[in-house]
Length: 379
Image 1 (cartoon, helix red, strand yellow):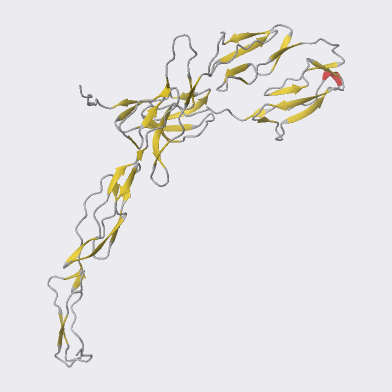
Image 2: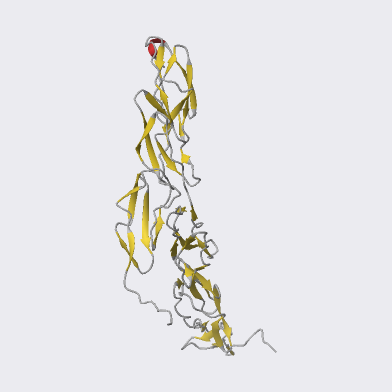
């Protein structure tokens, strides 16, 4: 029968619960003294400790507390994902304590093979993992046939989503035959871009003959739809009228006139329309002005345009943009470039966009750090 009251001189002994162990040198017995108080000397049972579970390669955890009842939570470095238990606890095992599960591992995040494209190829590998990249190229065509043009980013790399699943950084490019007709402008001529056949991204610059003025864009480019962008311009004849009764056509940087004429009679109105991406200071895209006294249009406002982007991120073979990547860039934007494991950066890692697809310093490259011996296929 368990006693509730004990006379002076009584002794009671304790045993440590599972998960705890006796503190060396501490007595497990209490004695009831003449003052009817129990003798106490401090804590005599303390938590057992689980053994250090080992290092987590390519991952980390906090091993500060390994005592009974503690928990360890595991994390993997960027580019790796956990295989096994995310959390383990120090539990009772037989006469002692042990971990509830084995130490997990961190494996490099894999990607499925990149998609195939029509009329294009890439160098295939046995496997594709985080930060590995592939570069597409278009297949050669027989002599005399129209070549294929690569539309889109030539290089894509293996990255990961929010669930640590391997995904490719973007869609693959396309290989298509892009062929624009020879652009001709009546009463005009080409300043550059001479030729009879034009393919993807070829450009032509026009100017008008004396006595004519250009209506439309001076520079046009052959785009992926096999059309010229902007459309082919025209050269309109400059009409001479009495200077006191007409206004010469207003100069419209980044815009166009409707209707287009060389000059306008007094009291005649013309509409000024800004090019796409441009607007007047008040935010409007068009305004109407009238020819007034002394051949004057009054205070003309100009169309202001947003700075043009670069169009795409520079291709970094065996490397990637680590910071500052955008779908397009404005003058002054910075990006930081790093190489994949095993490659060394040749050039400056931080470069600035200066316009016209130019970067300062020049876009660096990633070179192999050391020689690699590859297995030869069996004979």
